[in-house]
Image 1 (tube, rainbow, N blue to C red):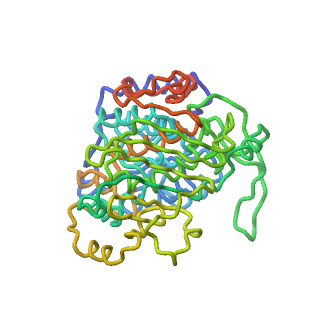
Image 2 (image 1 turned 90 degrees about the horizontal axis):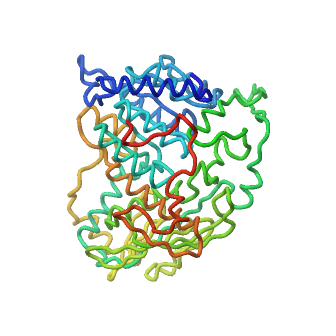
Image 3 (image 1 turned 45 degrees about the horizontal axis):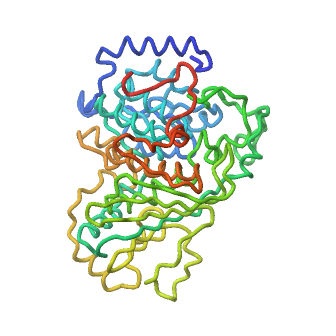
Length: 468
């Protein structure tokens, strides 16, 4: 089936609705244990780059039964490693053909396609591991969460740092009051490492499918890109093939990506968000350079404001595109701050926790080595450890087998994703103070609220929690 054919797509939806009343759509929590230890059957949507990695990690504990990618050349490369897996260049056809043979799905596509792929899987009762950010619209995050709860499926997000030992240490330290009441959090990244701002906009031009080189380095051939462009667009409006998007630079496009905040926020902000129990901000604002009508800006500084039940007022600062916070006041003078290209620090009334890196992997108490050693030694391990450290896809496989809950399940990862999307909401409205009403899930500003949901969805690609 080709998603470009609207009538066919609608027919698929109708057939899915008819089947919804039967067990075909019920989540199979322990299918892997039926028949004497049968493995979980996994389908991968997205086959190269992160998709290839996600499939490979899943394969450590599961059967790979289907692989889907809109880029047929990349699909062939990954599929060669799994000769028993069926291949597809669009996920609706994959589900229609293989639906009853799939237990779990990994979603590793460009950000704009996460939502329809995950919702189609959830509708059919499949457990899902979705790459970060889960979606790139706040409305979609809420719908995804509601749908997963409604269907009772197990979920996880591909933010591998949340499976690690270090993030649990940070959470346990904060629970023990290692730095006193939190006042400020600063997070920064070296992203974007793809075009954004005017540079990105200038590269995003319609044109013919480009030539690509395939095969081993010593025997490469040049051919036209074999891409199912209509499937790549997924739910977004139909446009001609556009350069500057596939396979990597889509991250810088407002419609398809989520910018540097979406790419790295679910990693670097994961530790502070969880350890400080931040919840939703009540206010946000940003300044940025070169925000265009189609691309995320060249650089940004975002401030998110929180009312914390324990700590009171907290400000979280996010910096991207070469911007960076001031040097932590307690950091030793011998340390070269200019070389610390990404990480976070949490400022408390007593001390500052610093981590240079993306996953809490280099935690320290700035300027206080003795306190750091003491807390590593004395803080009790009160939190449950991951089923598969460093591997959220395998963690979900094991959660299905053991009927447990993965650490970055949607109860956790939807709020974390939304934190990034709040930042992006501010970035798209630079210089404006935006107030957020958690109860209404709206800002009260009509122009800003338009950005909470995708402006247009192609006919036949509409998904919502109340219709699955």
